[in-house]
Amino acid sequence: MLTNRALTYASGLLVATILTAAPAAAQDDNVTVNVVEEGRGVYTLRGSFTVPAETPNVWRVLTDYGQMGDFIPSVRTSVVKKEGTDSILVCQESTSYFLAIPKKMRVLLQVQEDPYNRINFVDVAQHDFDHFKGSWQVEKTAAGTRVEYEANAKPKIYLPVWGKSIGLDMVKGLMRDLRKEIMRRPL
Figure (cartoon, rainbow, N blue to C red):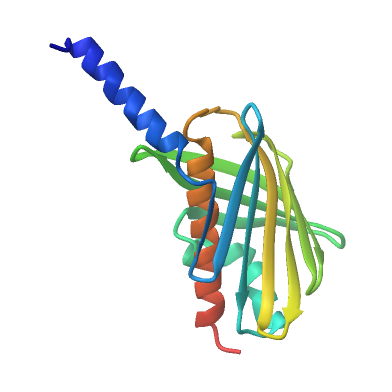
C-alpha cells in the first residue's frame, strides 16, 4: 500500500512527466509557434502567421500600442510614455497564469520602427525579466501579409518544467489575438 507521501510524490512525478513531454511547437488557426529553452531559464520564442490583409492594415494593428489591451486579453495596460524621432517608449502590464495562479508581468519597451517592415523592442526596465528583447517582421506575400515574431527572454522566475509550456501558450494567444484583430479591422 502506498503511503500519502509516496502517492503525492508519484502524482507530482506524473504531472511533471506529462508537462515536460508537452510539445514545444504548435500550429493551428494559421498560427505557428515555437519555444526553445536555450539554457537555464532563457527562452527563444517564435511565432508567425499569414493573414489575407494589406501590409498597412497589419502595421496599424502592430503599432497600436496604446490600445493593445482592447484586443489582447492578456495585456492589462499598454501606455505610450514617450514618442521620439527614433524610438517609442511603451509601458505594458500583462497577466499570465501558472497552474491557474495569475502572475503580473511588467515591461518598459523601447521600440524602434522601420515602417511597414520591422519593429524592434527591448525591455529597458527589467522589472520581471533579466532580459527581454525581440522583433516583429512584416512581409507582403501572394496570400496577403506574413507576420513573424521572435523574442529572447529570461524571466526573473525560473520554472524548469513548465517554462516552455507557459511561453508556448503566451505566444500562441498573442498571435491569435493579433491575427483576429487584423481580420476584424476594416481595410
